[in-house]
Image 1 (tube, rainbow, N blue to C red):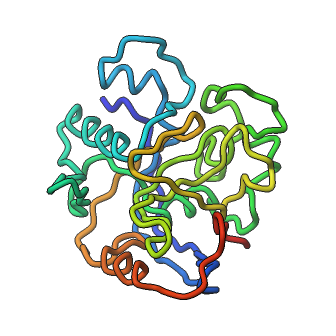
Image 2: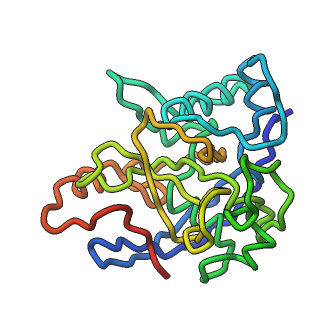
Length: 248
């Protein structure tokens, strides 16, 4: 029996936006699965054998590399093919593998929006924890209203790591995280807002949500491709200062 509650999502599409290049494009997605809630400290403790408090609060202070390793550990525990391989310090996504993984950025936004097109899939006070709630730590998962896919906490409470690079031309190997956290102002907690950090960076309002889905096309997978990352890294010219949120 799986430790994680994943929801199957149907094939669909989502519009993404690159603010620096003033470009919008539509990504067609194949069906995949994604966690109903972020990974909790209890789930992490159960899988990794940690000693310490284990609760239904979202796991935080986990960096991208450890998030990837956690995905592989979850796959091993259930006898699934590992989604990630390590080669000379580089993480390689084995796209045909059935194991647990991080969602692509396109998958994450599609899952968060659940068919909506505005900044939130409902009144923000009803669906997410933000700085308005004056919290010192994340709240337990699943206490706010879910979206139409049955997913909780995609907005507010904790940011969530994704697989994709943020902006390789400016930030190198920084990876995307999405969703907003409990300490963020409401204007920042939007389905379109994107931030990122180095693979070894962690933060007390940054966790992860598991996904699954195997794909035969290893060139472009759920809105991501290694070739596109390489091309994005070659872009020159004016770069914006600070983070570049997507606006809709």
